[in-house]
Length: 134
Image 1 (cartoon, helix red, strand yellow):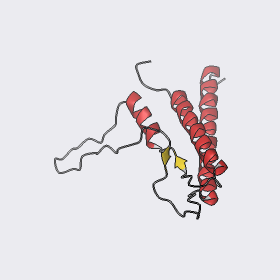
Image 2 (cartoon, helix red, strand yellow):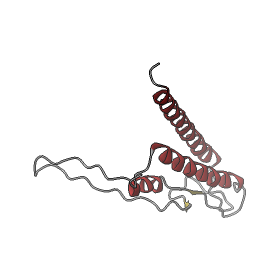
Image 3 (cartoon, one colour):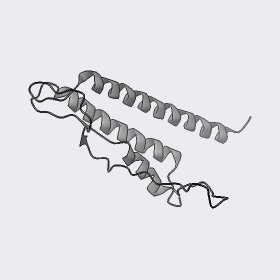
């Protein structure tokens, strides 16, 4: 291809990121009783930047000089980072809130299922195109 990501590449990269995030969240839960443990998480910006590197940015055309120009949002490098806002800290210094981690895991699972469904739909569309309208 010409340097652009196909939809299957984008889906695969997103699923890899979601798998890595699941591992980080699982580690947080596993260390829920470890003294002075601070939970970590992956930032979503790394996926967005990975896609942006491979694709041409789409910016709205300004038809008038008084229109607002688009601004690039900063992202993350995708490494596990300490959570910025801690909800509570246990007396032993542990900042893992199980409920919060479970909510993140549920969202992660939902995102993964969405990517799986997108992949299935894409494959079904390709099969339909190959078979023709017969």
